[in-house]
Image (cartoon, rainbow, N blue to C red):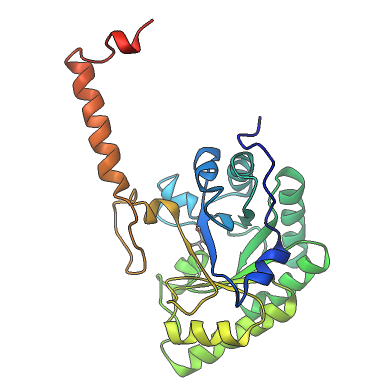
Length: 269
Ligand code: KIV
């Protein structure tokens, strides 16, 4: 059964397009129904990111996430959130050709209520994006630092440090807009080029580690709520000290159980 009473107006890709130059777009990741329901009223878009492979499954990168796992988590998120536009992050290896991409995306649309899919890659993936959009799939593209390329690139590398790379990023962005992407994630790049791409495109850009000049922002929920303790990238702001709060609460629970203080009469039948 769905956790949300479906009375709120759903945000669509047409709304997201209209937000450009009128309202900053707020996006967050979610991987389950409970957190999706907590984010439902606060954000415009939810990304079921393949970052779940790291922050949910504890893996060292996103590459082993499967289509099945992503579908399972997206079904949960769709049960929890009825208002934000929900984006399914296509996992590594599920869109290497346009035919494979369409087959994967069709499966996502048939098995989940996701509103759109996200694919990493620049101009070299424009043909895939065009094929998807021509076949009725709403696509968010993703350029800059692309986590699915971490092994091929030899690390997570901030982009746009040279004029050649800035030019390449701009050309990638334009190619993806022409191919029909309705929004573009700009990850891990110098702020000046993110700002220039945002000013050049007519579709909205959503930044993560790309400075203040984008049309919106996305953060991984476990990063921004301070649950992920292993490291904190420069671009992450902690809005909550989640890890400390949880540990403190569980420590208190353990202490009360050990001391026979919980459950007391108040919590007994
Ligand atoms: O998987 C993810 O969470 C993402 C964001 C970092 C944009 O792709």
